[in-house]
Image (tube, rainbow, N blue to C red):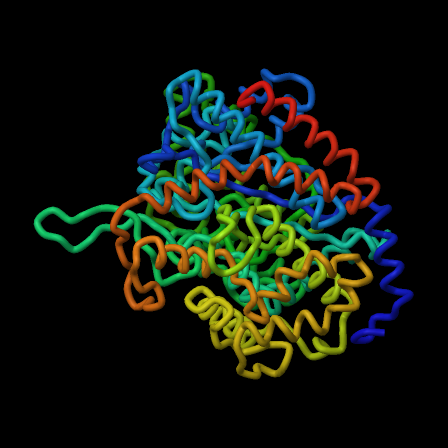
Length: 568
């Protein structure tokens, strides 16, 4: 028995995971950039970037055409998002994530050959200003989503196009058929627990890009280039457009508090679409009850979306809904029947979304690391797949452990004090990585390093890791605790110091790099390491759950076929 979880119970969980519905889902994003200048590319061969990538894959037919449906734009089309189908093991999810990225990269290489681009996916933070405009919202998106994206770009500007991170979704098939309400209650509880216990540690481990665009202080003409920032992740430290107003303890305290808080957000105009809760960890809804479509309410309001004037009128009125919400009395559209119908429809949509049962927890602090050379300091892992696999394994083990109410969290609640400690811990980890001083919330806010907290967590969850056959996959994390290896951001700092002969230990100010040779080397390495990743994933296939193997085998076959035709 470990922490009150019996061996028999762990065996039940393992069997439910291996034979039940898939419960782990990875998402990854990359910004389409010129691999030499790092300028964000707004079109490829006359098409929006994500549309061009998915279209090229569709044209390959077979499995590639099926996969193309899971290659979608994020808010702007300049950010490619890959959403592989859920699976049952962190090895499987890491493999699926990387194989889909490799497929997208293959599409970019072929498009480069055809159209003369130098396009490549840049993960983490953008190293050049993206200059995102409303025109970068997807032309292929449904009208409401496109108008919503355009509004977000208008509010957040270039930040929307400079944040490309990874997400990890977790659910609990071992809970059985207990009903949507009970599952939702558990997922809200688990969102709070994952935030309090795992939020700062995931930042310290998964943060991978301390590099970001910056300008020097030269006058009258400042020098522009790549800077090494004080943070482990430039995306989380600078460009992630976090809705801090929503980061309140009432949100994930319990289902009643969740709905009450969400309604307050809706009524105040803070919540726009119902899915825009941009927090480090969030509870995600399952199926939303059906209701009238945006197209239907526009037709009822006399707005013709087939005409340019009608679309523009719908844009103005919907953006007024987003900007003013239902309560603000002094805007020029408030008395217009068309605006009132759109706002009533939007509030009904928000109510349906907030009442939808939550069926999974999404951790949003992850990042795709670059590939490292064999002689890089700070460790011997070489590929993104190796590190991502370890992070996914840690989150899976932590989720199972927390879901089973171990004695270490008997008195853990998502209260104001705990949430403030979690925020403080995340900020500390962002600046100090595993050496940051944190308050370990499961241990009565005891002060210790993030490294010590991670060591305690690995010790407490070891029986769960062993029962789920994840012990070997956590070896990189254990070596990070002992200092034998470093997370990606720390390795990048070491490399930059060696590369340019500069001191990277002082984080007081962002420092402009002498040139862009190191960032270009990272892109070159990461693309060059993809063949190694494919071979490693193939070697891992026998270790994956039996029901996951056909999916990964099909992805491997598709990647090999497409790469042989595209770059062979």
